Length: 161
Image (cartoon, rainbow, N blue to C red):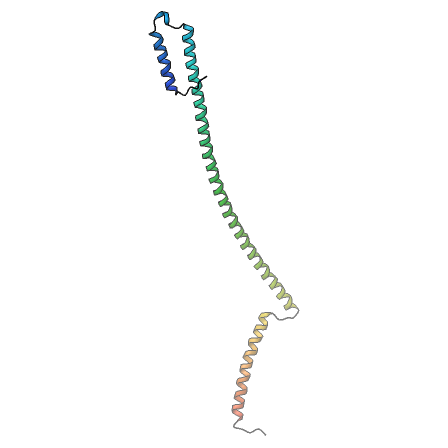
């Protein structure tokens, strides 16, 4: 059977030509009503077949187009979601790290305070006490040096026996 590559419009036009040619054919040469019906049925069936094939091809093309579009939208959404997750994860990690540092600082302060109280109770001077003592010793050294200098200056005029 030969393949038929005509378009649906060409099939309809051919069918109309067939019907017109039968109407202008002399009575004795006209095909029977069954032959006419078979021709019309063949043309209509072929037309319906082509319509069905065209619909299937169009449906496949549209399905592929829609599928590609949906895949692109899905990829775009996934990329945005991953970026948002990364950003939120980084922000959460930063907040957690900051809270941990603050908590460690609080614990260090509490421990220092507790250790200093304990040392003070058993009579061990604190760092602040030691610094104050160092400053006091420095002041006393300066005062002693000044007094020594004054004593030597006032003693140079007198002889000590």
